[in-house]
Length: 98
Image (tube, rainbow, N blue to C red; front, side, top):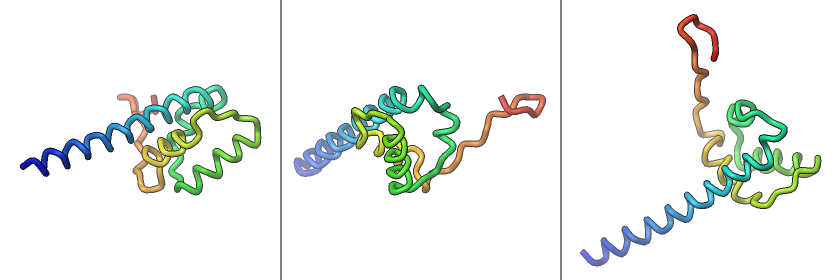
């Protein structure tokens, strides 16, 4: 029983660390991406880790200054990786996209 509790506590700590990294990444997205890009443009992408890395490198080459590049990369891969489904657009009652 004691081993189970220790294992559960260790797993919770690991999850919290991952969530903290994702939270940092989301804040970095708001800070460095949103001044030039809409969230729709960013969130419609479904790229691999390498693909997101190339995008961040490209943006860095155009002058983007990252404080938390690794956290941003983790956030983008975890949330908008090539293994994640694209969220369909919200459609109004008259059939138009909102």
